[in-house]
Amino acid sequence: MSKSRKKKNPVDKTALYLDELYNAFTLMETKEEIKELFLDIATHTERVNIAKRLQIAKLLVEDAEYSLIKKEVGVSNETIAKVSIWLYSFGEGYKKAIQRLAGSKKQKKLPKLWRGNNEAKLAAGLAASGASYLYKKAKQARKRRSVNSSS
Image (cartoon, helix red, strand yellow):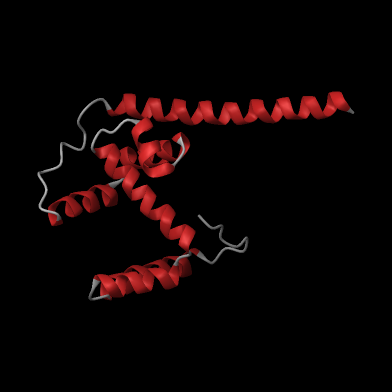
């Protein structure tokens, strides 16, 4: 996701800007109009990242394993963990979108959103994210040691 500028807008203006953005999307009359607006507003990378997060949430709701999601969507364990944490901590928008997408495709009803042990899913996601972070730090430390020892 792109970074916003260092200078922040006053909170009241940011809320107004976001509200107008949401209104703009709801005022579009067709899928094509929404697509045109989204193409104008977001970069290709932003659109792809948003689409991937929705697919990750959808697969998590379907109780897919991290390894399958990683392979299917092409993301890291850390990204899956972040989406998982958001999905199971807040995630009402994800859940509504997934349910409505399932209904629009006339698929069978989704399994219960809270099926299984969600605490275990979150713990596994956090562990995977932490392991990834520790691996990167260890790799950086090895690189520094090899540079220092060759000096």
